[in-house]
Length: 440
Image (cartoon, helix red, strand yellow):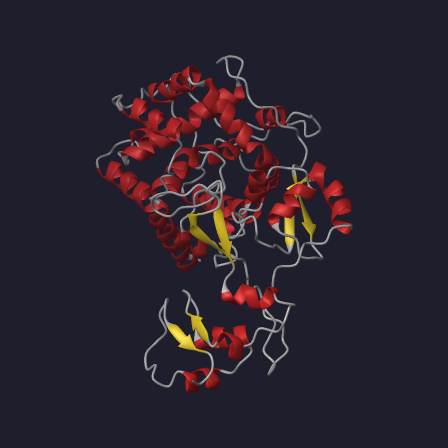
């Protein structure tokens, strides 16, 4: 048992060290915000009472309300001292910049319901649903200087330890469902490690549990208090927790502080639709009658989601758009891409070989419009759709990422034929190389 606990502590310590540098590249208003608040001297807060180690209270809540903010407030459980100077200065800032809160709560709309559902399921404080506002502004494409990404700002190594898939096609850190599951697992583990003290847990999420644990040990060594407010922590962490608590206080009583929250319904916003045919993201946005950037943010986990030409096997959509999308999809066929036929030696249709015309940069014509000059390859294809063969083209200019194997597949010839045609080439291919497709 002792060995298991010690091993768990070591794993958490490693994760915390990797999460330390999760400072998001904030929008312009956040940069101004940090500059304004950071200039104020941080002083130890007066201790009015001993803060409870466990702040979670079992509260009844109305899950049937149509207002997600009301449901959220009914589940708030953290004891927030708004008289604390470090919290009060952030409340003051938010009051002076109400449009910031409005913008952040609007950006949270697509994701908030799922996060609240997960917190309810795990019996965790509902206030944690506001943490992505602090971390990323609820922007799944947010990227920090340390490489932290997604709503919860998880760096690659931490994501790997938390079991998130990260490859060329998919990044779980940017996916709402996977990243929320991983982040809440981590926060729950931190809360267990710090004996259910959520302030210490949040500080550790920001700076690493190793940093917080060392600060606690140092205070104990000098017979000082070990609560969050008494610890000497990094400057960012000294701002991180009070900023979060101030946000919670405002969401709990927005009218008191003169803040208008963006209305969010207490219903699922996102649903997943499986695709049984090839559909580009740009086409999907038109079928769903929604802006392409919105659809891209809902599918941010797919690393190619920022490309309008990317094709996904399943699509995250607003729930209210799903039925209309399915109806339109049934009658939709994506326009085929231009292809180059294989050589007479092999009849396999080549994949994704674009044959768009090359356009001259020099203006010509009466009004200075560019002249379209089709490339030799495009000319061959356009001419009665005749088969384009290696023998017809004879030469190929190597592009970045190409190899003899990929070029051989492109023209339907073997690697051995390419090697014989380029017997004098005794080095690796480089972009810009002109190689023979047939022996001269």
